[in-house]
Image 1 (spheres, rainbow, N blue to C red):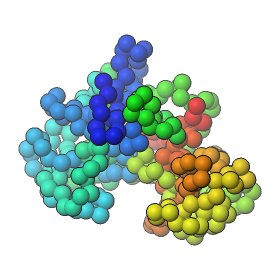
Image 2: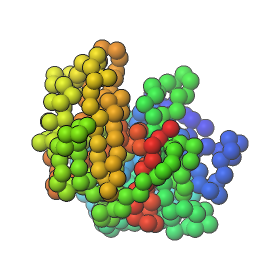
Image 3: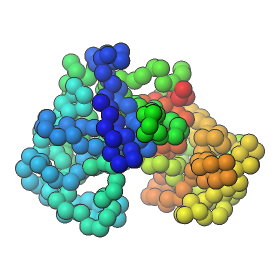
Image 4: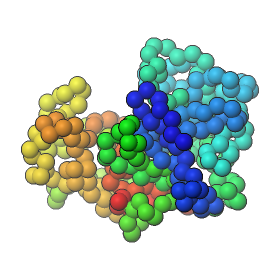
Length: 331
């Protein structure tokens, strides 16, 4: 089942002995603070990938890959690798994607990927932004109606400390369905603005009753981003209001004793209001060390990225068939 890699445990598939009904979708449990999971390439080798809403293409280091070559270009973590494209099969549980295109790095500069507990990134965005217009893995898998009854996937994440000794569960990825034990009704459905990223309409951001932004913007739901990122003009106001000011290793820290006095943050997405309380957006390392979960990133079109902190509070369903995102309070 689970394998240990350095100080991290990677994902494992739930099996039928634990009550999983594969005909109704299967669960893939995440037990590391890297959202990594195990996939099989042509039945011969396990690879670990980050499940990433914002990525355009699956990438990995090329070792024993099926060799059908195409040119492609990307830049990951400020390091641009030498690369080739390959095509092969990839299996997630019983769902197999045949002739899937991979962008494979034949060499990588620097130490960027030397010590990480994963082999690559599995893009889960839409085909429209795919490099070379290669069909995305889930688009291929969703075509098989017999194995995948529902064209959707979902994430449940936790704030639990990841413990190698007792295999603390850090989250769960469900493919071809949802897990109703991980959220409470109702589910708020938000239509996509476009089929590039999983992008929703964001019409308001506020701290308690103080409206910070009421202009039309967009927000991407992204498991590949740890924090909540937005325009510096708004993020700076939020961090100032919560008292986050002194940098600690590149992070803004704040006084842990003030947590119960901090405001709630409200996002209006697709006409629905979603709230983060201080315990949701403050990262508490220990009783004396607290960090802000808000980061400034100025992107085109006044765009926000709602990462793992948001998804931890709100169970997130990515409905591929109906081009919408469902959000429900996680339990």
